[in-house]
Length: 384
Ligand SMILES: Cc1cc2nc3c(=O)[nH]c(=O)nc-3n(C[C@H](O)[C@H](O)[C@H](O)COP(=O)(O)OP(=O)(O)OC[C@H]3O[C@@H](n4cnc5c(N)ncnc54)[C@H](O)[C@@H]3O)c2cc1C
Image (cartoon, rainbow, N blue to C red; front, side, top):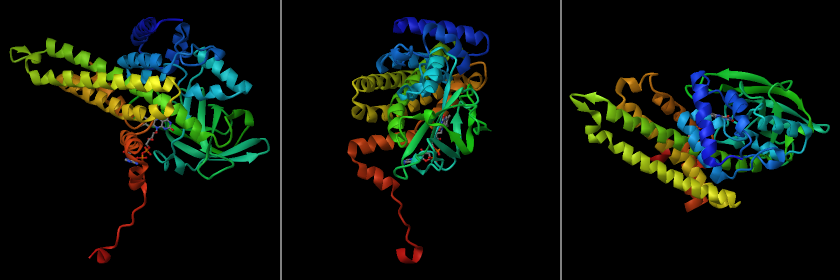
């Protein structure tokens, strides 16, 4: 097993190679080639061939990967394949073996056209059919479906409360699964689109956990995933500030370096410190996560998902601005960083919603309920 520093060096070497081949943002290429130094299995249990690194260690790896490009948020560890560990079937075991070997890559499909933040409005439905299930529904705004070998698919459960959900692991070419394509502005290493499935038969061996376990699986998985996404965003912002510091030293305008305009130095100091604050809080959240104290970790993780991404975005925007026209070109990657972070501020829980969950955890659920309760607006005559 490598140390964290050795892992970072291995990422540096592979990033340079893939950049020279024009494949820096390809998740499949990363997974295939980084299996040699254990990157895809880093946070998977040893029982499936992984290295069992904890959240505190993984945080540093995601942060380092994010320095290169935010698409690298998808190349570290088991990612959306992690919940498969709780399955027992030979299908799951084979999928995990491939994941560790760098041959598998997992997408996750939860969002639907009319159910994003409000996942409880999901319409995709599982119904029992003998020992298995029939799944009917559609998904939209899901990343990775064209690159993935497998998809973790959420539906309403066959039994239990109307809000309960079930989760299935399916090979991406499962009969009856149709991929729909949409255009995305950023995070272009992956596709963007959705799924359609109508009365699709799925055997019981594809179910993750039990029918109705969806919320439990979602909460545990996304607690970890949001923390790691924030770490990748922090790394992305930190690298942009380094590029910015170099630019204000090198670029001469009106007889001197633009760094003499000290207002261009101010954002570097501000955002570097804010990113360090976010990283310190992320480490605290990781400590709670590693102790199994998910209740303490959750408000920190959601807060960092919001603020880590927003601070990184502000840092990349500032770095792009000091570059003038070149910042708006493909000569530098700052525009990509801005665009990708704009995607991440929506993906995996929007900044707004993450902030609302922080408020409700700290000050009471009544404030959350106040925001989502349906208020009727009185007609004008009544208001008079
Ligand atoms: C790059 C990218 C990758 C994605 N990848 C995937 C994927 O792989 N799989 C998948 O299933 N989904 C994926 N998504 C979808 C993503 O999870 C949803 O877009 C997100 O949850 C928001 O849902 P929505 O787009 O329907 O927005 P809505 O829920 O319609 O929200 C609209 C606006 O209202 C705000 N808002 C909503 N509720 C509240 C509230 N209570 N308080 C304050 N503000 C609120 C939101 O912040 C947002 O600005 C991805 C999205 C993006 C952009």
